[in-house]
Image 1 (cartoon, chains in turn orange, green):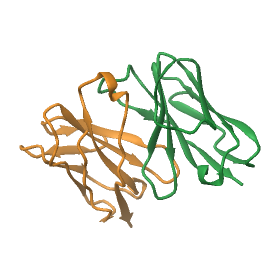
Image 2 (cartoon, rainbow over the protein chains, first blue to last red):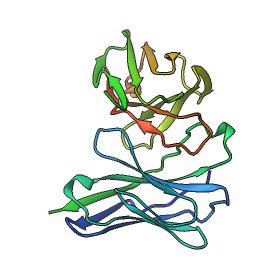
Image 3 (cartoon, rainbow over the protein chains, first blue to last red):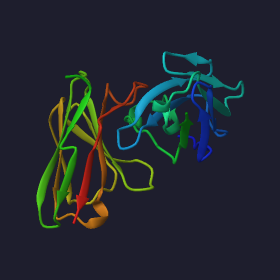
Length: 114
Length: 114
């Protein structure tokens, strides 16, 4: 699976949009971009995933650049409860041996301030 | 109860003890996983079970022994652990591995080896 690069930390004011970038310049055609987050001392929580089109759900939006080398997770109105570590993960659709194998990096620590 | 449930939430054990971590999923999934998260390190995949058969063991020491009696339950048996094994142990589940399904995590067991 392709490696990802994320800033180690970001701050955001409550009520503002939080835009979390991720670089995955070596992504291949069959690899999806997944986002998970981990609130302190809990298990990671799935947020959203996409291949090449922008995606939106009740939690967030995912914007993937046309060349697919980077993406941005957008939390439209951040709250204090969104303070967490956010992981960008690239995962193959090749099946077979991928076995739910999510390869986690260090992620981005997002701190939402009042 | 829904989701992935792990017990106990916290465990302190001596190096000569034997203990077991328990995981139960109520999602109808048929793949289950153990991940380990040490302080300041990314999550690491330890074991993968697909349809109750172990399909992956990521070079985990034999003092960690997984057991999957059915598709809803997963155990991690611990014996003669070392202090460096202190970590957050996370159980997860998903539909058949190798597909782009969402992996759902439990809240973890915080293990301290003294």
